Image (cartoon, rainbow over all chains, first blue to last red):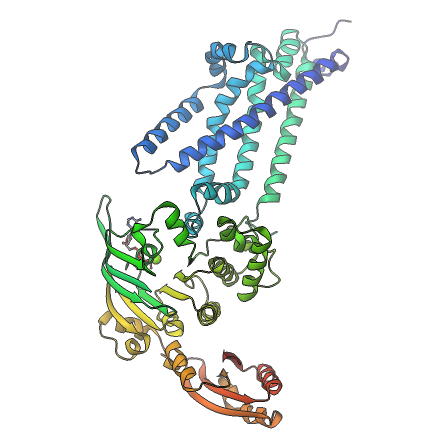
Length: 233
Length: 343
Ligand SMILES: Nc1ncnc2c1ncn2[C@@H]1O[C@H](COP(=O)(O)OP(=O)(O)OP(=O)(O)O)[C@@H](O)[C@H]1O
Ligand SMILES: [Mg+2]
């Protein structure tokens, strides 16, 4: 069967879609996103905490740390993702042993998204009323107690909505990573869709990505609404 | 006892600011001590040196024989646990319920869970919020939030309660309710309270002794009663005259004196507003409850903007049940009754 590769109708040749590879690509995209998101959350919170705790410190050590963290964050936040992947190829090869497949996308996904999230974490901590932290200090709280009992719970809605935004941009990054061989829906859309001139596959991959984004957003919004006790409903 | 000796605090920055300058104060155990001053006078800075949130540049703050600036790390934290502090904006944790806010300081000191809950529930009852344990701060009014903050400040059985403008964000009626609560805490738990404010009303209502601060210095100090009658400095006179109708009969000093003079019986304070003052409410009460012996201890009538306000201090003796019924009766007649001393 010969089908046209141009025109509006070219989007609707569903018989040409290999659903098995579509679903396995979907699985890869979700896996890359969730796996890197978990690590991004952990690294981002640690880095954000470091930035927050060392702000306006008097000790020279703290200032140096703050400066180093800030430079790291700003540099990696500024490098366009597609360039970062290429830049990190040798490191990726050393770390995961390959430069293709979903695993190979992880280092660059994490390194580009963690600084992005770290800034949001720092901002979320700064938004906590300083009086509340001071009240905890006046009750004799240790720094660790302040982190776990004040900073994290009080900023939790901002932390969760930050993770949602980061997760959604990670989905976009995985698609980009797919183009240079990391697997997932981006890879499928590029190889089986674009290069094979199969527009239907590109369309379906797009819709699946949109659905994943929508689900992420919904889960994020619902969680924020559940934990945010600042507004009475 | 709190002993402040030659305390100064200089903030070094682009511009050097002397927030507190050579302050000397002594605050006795069990008293309510007021510090009044305009914005920027250095009140907060001074009180923050009490619990080591700031360290004095020179001088010493000694609290119950401990010099605060000698304490560091764990020792300082343990000392702070023995001091409660309340603030203008309450500073509650919005992510926690009322109960969880009150258990917070107990979690910090690793009190077992059961004990924490029981203690917090008792304190919530003390501050009059029973039934609201599971509400979040955002569901409470300002006055209620401050009550939660007070309960939280009392959780570790402090020897000292610091109040930094705790009523400044509240309306006059709520302010009075919170002040009554502080007074009750002082009387029942015998906790020393240091109250910072820019409102003379607050001082008059609950403080025994007071200091006036201006530009970092204490310019006048003494008993509230004396300062109200004979203010020495111009700034003190300004503060005293801000109070439109200085009702000295309300001051804590006068009430304490009264309690000493009348050692027995239940003492209640009645407040009559406007038309109530014209009705024969008391004689009607005596007719209904003949087993009560009543003794007028003190009384006065003040003319205010909204009409006359009468205050009457009564000593009630005799049949306990009738005394309770009589209070209900007064309540029904919408006479404000406040038990100054129960029996
Ligand atoms: N951390 C700080 N760094 C620099 N200056 C400060 C600091 N804290 C307070 N000051 C300055 O010290 C002075 C006294 O401030 P303080 O907060 O003690 O006044 P206050 O009497 O409590 O006023 P208010 O009624 O407005 O609360 C002010 O001039 C203030 O700007
Ligand atoms: Mg202040």
